[in-house]
Length: 275
Image (cartoon, rainbow, N blue to C red; front, top):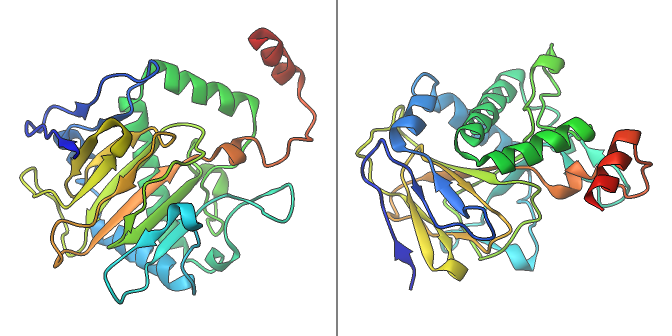
C-alpha cells in the first residue's frame, strides 16, 4: 500500500522528509511548472518526440531489471537521446547514430525542454546538490545534451544534463539508476496545446521502499533521487495518450567512461582534500 499525498494549492510544492540529509523528491508548485511551459508550443515538443521515436527502428533495451511495459498487444516504445557510454570502448558517444538525421528544428525543441528542466533543477534542488554538480562540471569536461545539426552548437546545448528518455503509454518496473545527480520527470498529455491548474492526475510516480506515490498532472515537474527504488505507474485513464520524459545525468558520463584517464592537478588536489 502506497500513501498518496496531493497538494492542491497550485502555489505550493510537494516533498518528503529527508533521507540521509537529502529529500528523495520535490514536485514543483503547479503554477510555477505551468509558467515554464506557457509560452512554448507543446505541439512542437510532441512533434519532436514523435520524430525521435520514428528514427529508432527498435525499442531501447533496458535489461530485465528495468523492463518497460505498455498496453496488452502493443510493443513498448522507449527512446533515449543524448550522450551514451559506449559498451565497446572507453568513450562517450555524443548520441545514438540513428539520431544523426533528426532535423535542427526538432533538436531545438528538445534542447529547450532540457534547459527548462535545468531551470527547474536550480529552482528546487538543495544547495548541497547544486554545489556538488557545479563542482563536477568545473573539474570534468563531460558531455551534455547538444544538437549535432545546429549551426551554432557552442550556444545550443544543455548546461549539465546529459540525456532525455521518454516512453509513450508505458509503465516501468521498480528499479534504481546509476545517476550522478537528481533527475527530472515531466509528463505530457497529447492532444492539448495548453495545460490548466485544474487538470486531472494522469499518472503516479512511485517510491515503494518509502511507501509513497506522487500524483502527476500534465506539465508537472518532479525532481527525484534515482538511486532510491522507483517506478512509473500505468496511466489513470486508458483513453489518455501520455508521454513521460526523464532528464538525467549518468555517472558513467561524468566519469567519461574511462578510469584510466590521468587526473588533472585540480582533480588530484580535490581527492587529497577528500582523503
